[in-house]
Amino acid sequence: MAEKQNDLIKKYSVWKSVMFPLRQLADNFEKFLLSGCLFALILTMLSYLFDQTYICVFNKALAQYLPCYDHNSLYGIYLLLKLIVCSFFVTVWIYLSTRETAEDDVYEYFLNHKKKFLLDFLIIVVFFVISLIPAVSGILLLMREPNPVWQIELLYFTFIGLGFVVPFVLMRFFTIFAELLAGEKWQNFVEVWRNTSGNVFKIVVSTALIFVIVLFLLVSINTSFRAESTSQPQLYNFAAEFVFNLITLLIVALFVSFIQGQKVLVLDNK
Image 1: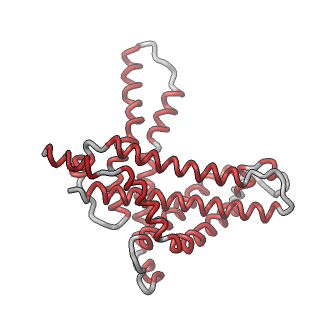
Image 2: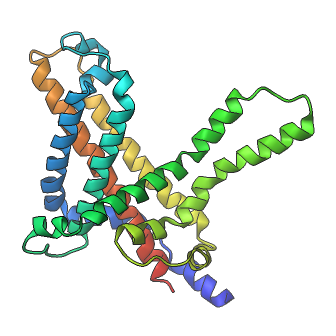
């Protein structure tokens, strides 16, 4: 057993885990553009429908030249619809990126697999809910009035503080989410836990590097569309919103490919 664990530790590579999604995006970049532009256009239409376009939200200096209205009461519905569209994109991206050649009739394939969209949406919702546990823990700790009984306070802090450990546990089970999104039978938790033992630090580093790339993309796009004046604000707003949505989908594709790479690195080491 010790030799098997040592072998697993040697085989897991931070370099490979980071390069896998980048290589998959590069190899399927044309497929990403075709599907990404379509879904980015849908997201852009949603943004205009709920008046949540890029300039109205992020560039207040330029927003004064546009008819921006306050529809924050519908913001929850807007986020839900965006999540649904992104989950549809995840299904399409996994289908396109994991096949060298798509089936002849792609539309017929998706019409016959409508349940897959619903299942992927539920999986993504579960993933988001789990990912938000640390934020909930932080809010509960900030809003709590200190209890004069230190034993109760310590117990409460310990229990709520466990939420901050959730992301590190979740990273070890990226492979299960990858299998579920791929429509495969997922491995049991014990096997995945065993195969990731000794690799936690490497998995954390790999995930951190992916988030550095994501942060770089977000900062770059935000900086690029921070102009304070333009002769055609309407056209500028549309371009900014469309590009921002396309970059958002690029980030989604990057992360989905990353957890697919985790599945390859973790489960292929058996």
